[in-house]
Length: 80
Figure: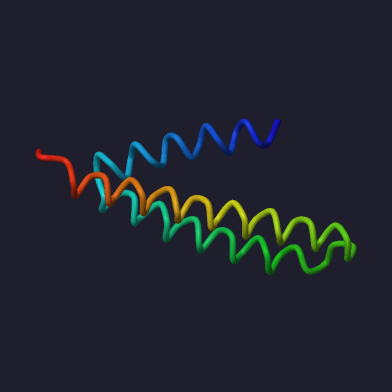
């Protein structure tokens, strides 16, 4: 279920970055802030659960950054 939500969010982030690269950058920065806060907050969790949560958050952050970069590059190539 979470995977479906992440894929839907990635599609939205991609189109936001295509339409407005500035807004795509804002989404990236906000994601980095939230992921960092959540990773620090998860330190109290049990070790295997902490490992899973941190890796999941880091993967989601990297995918969002990558998707926004692709959208920005596509936007620069479009003729309008």
